[in-house]
Length: 143
Image (cartoon, rainbow, N blue to C red; front, top):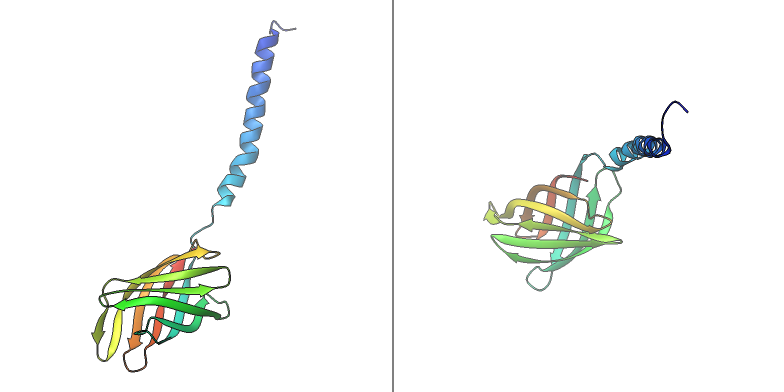
């Protein structure tokens, strides 16, 4: 019929099927990538024992309620690392420029997460009065 042989019809049919599959899959793949949405992160922690290497506190991510966390870390300015463990994952802050200024341990940090927080990344500022060792990490992050 119309001078088209069978193999040409098969090739045309496969090409049409490939275009339909692409039309259905492409929007799903585009929608699968989440937009990077910045949000506020505040971690407040009272360090206790062992030279201030462990403690309990809260972690607030965005507009969510504060999460109770336990934390362990190393405090050896200028480098410090603190891991906040919560149900389902953890968030680790890394300070590379810590110093004592006006009676407080200050510096900037980066953070990364594991578990359900694995897509978190961000940065902020640390302020920890030496007299009380209440560490407050404030900053922004994104998913």
